[in-house]
Length: 298
Image (tube, rainbow, N blue to C red; front, side, top):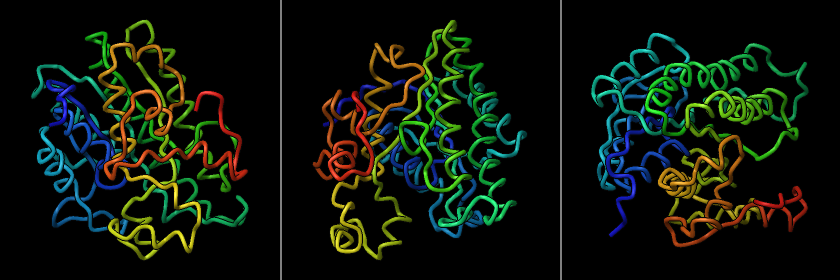
């Protein structure tokens, strides 16, 4: 039986419909948390992402894992939606919020890999910033006061990569680096209020969309290694979820405020495994194969 280390914890996972957001929400539930699962796709009214997953499915998964999942349809690019979300949390939880995870993305169908920034669709490039940067700013703006008022808790920015290097597409790169700087800047403003802010990145992810891309299921994901050898070190979205659950339960988490954390680094520190029993270490794998240098503390 898993430890209910987060029992009584109130969390909002913004962008919990699928992928990392769903994995984080589920693992917070596994640790006993109450999780507000937000996004645009609900049963009978899917978003324009062209995916079938819904926030109700995520909320049900949270509950099945041992927590309490609450689905709230929210377009995080719409200020009124975001404001209403946190007013609901404040009312239903007597002003309590312990954890806010900013995972809204929506940039995959908009990113044109292999094109220079001037060849890339400008409207799509700007929409990536709308979805993945402005939405995070709106969400933190309305969520932070609940944390600061109780002088506790944490805001996490989910990103891709642990530094400021170019990620192969200007618009993608700008959005992911912006998440890192948002965490760093929010940490500075929140420090006097005792609230932690950090950025967290997964490694090579086995999201629903990535499994579809390779034409495999989670059950036979290893078949994709023939197409992409580095997929051998891939991880499920639940891996970073377990890392965030462990981090949220850490009484010394404030020491990590302003930092960029990794799923594999959190696994090294807290000793958890992925749901399949593996402990993939993308940092070490990438360094070994010359993809990039591993950080000293990764």
